[in-house]
Image (cartoon, rainbow, N blue to C red; front, side):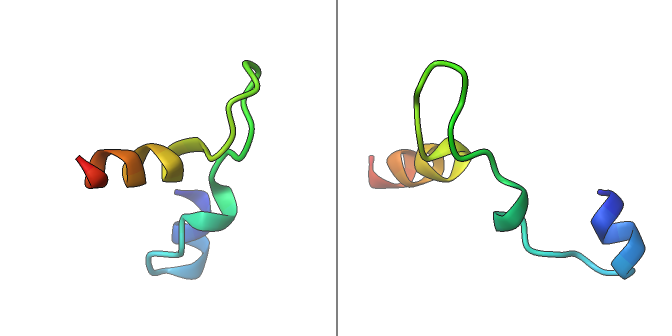
Length: 39
């Protein structure tokens, strides 16, 4: 949200997405979206 406000327009989410979490899962939200779209 801060980056969007500074840029005064929507910015890409990819640079801000989580790639690894504390449980060792990788892919973050992007992986979840792709998995949901494949169903």
